[in-house]
Length: 199
Image (cartoon, rainbow, N blue to C red; front, top):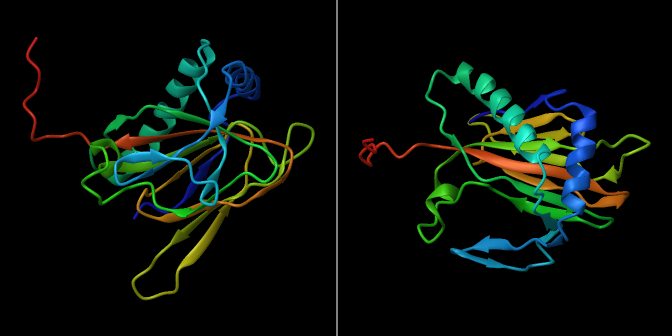
């Protein structure tokens, strides 16, 4: 299991602000939950908005995020996979995500979800004034063979990247005030059974 880790200052604050502006310009809508290969709206499980930024900042931010993730992954000694499509989330007051895992063992779910190597959560704003919010902590529960489950609470820092094993149970606690903005993506294990494309 890849233990939870927080890497500070992966993205500069000005780029975080610019990306939030691009997200808000995209007409955010409710975020569905994937169950048995189908997206559904389940407000008792997740309350957040999905955004689709279309400006230049999103590509710049993803490049920084991927570079940081690959540097961390290099310490594992195994080959890193490919970065999946990113999800951009807004959590308004009361927003949360119930405990869940990012990697699925259900064959009805897409390969991308079943082959996730590493979960990446980029915080675009912090739990501190003036741009901050209260609540909305990322809590990761790490299981151990001979010890009790440990709880890791990762508090948002503007531009910081949280990385953890997608098989670990985690949640976002309810936002008590303000608005929380994040980018979420994954490293996906490459499919080595498929023949390589010849060009």
